Length: 301
Ligand code: F6P
Image (cartoon, rainbow, N blue to C red; front, side, top):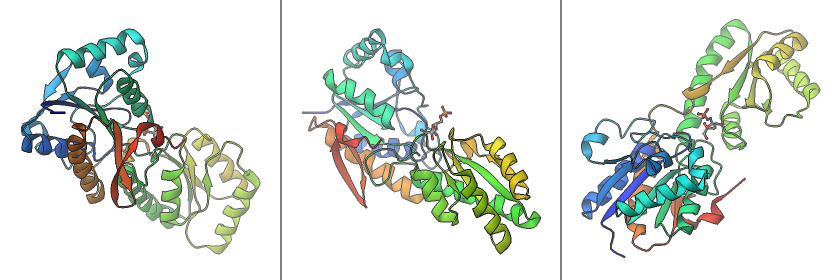
């Protein structure tokens, strides 16, 4: 099918590399003489007919920045049929030949609904959580580096004072990010389940204390345990200062790594190229190769 007019949106938690992907999409559209629009604020933009024509002035200076030039977000309205139908009508009225969705598993569910309603949609797995069935999702590499780098800073102070730390890490219900960070900083003090073995954790911290090498750094997957309360318990049990840290958006923001820029740009270009096949697939990295997968095969959790 001939593609003349495309719309892209970013949905869910922003992921570093989203802007690089939009750049790749824009460049491919420019080369192929395709008009490109962005829906503002993810699926909300489809519902509210809130579209912006993407040209280089929107992207200049932002390709190497985190966040999303199109704004991202979650859309509870999109789950309701009235709003979903309004979004469908807007896509039709604007005569878009294809939609590209950048986001995680929640965004993919939205893409599936649209595909089932006849929309020509391609998705790129963009989330720091790595919770889709690809080797890497866009943004995961940058977030890992962000977290490791900030833990390095924390460690300088822990070393200077002889303290330990309990650090809350994002990832929702996927353990990839926290485990990747844990390996990178060489800690096995990782809590990913609410029913973790407290006695064993205390034993391990006491052992590290005795060794007097690296400070004990406990990583906690968000919402699995209360970071502040846990630090306080470990402090009194192990007789060592355990400083709680909630990293928040330090993990998700910032410049995408070279890896995520290349990933975003190349996947973005391939997404535009693929729209003509009306295949409705997700395009992500398996190993080092961009790979197309049917939507249903992309859920990991
Ligand atoms: O999906 C990305 C993510 O950062 C998760 O790791 C986290 O659970 C969630 O988004 C946080 O969402 P919000 O920014 O809405 O607090």
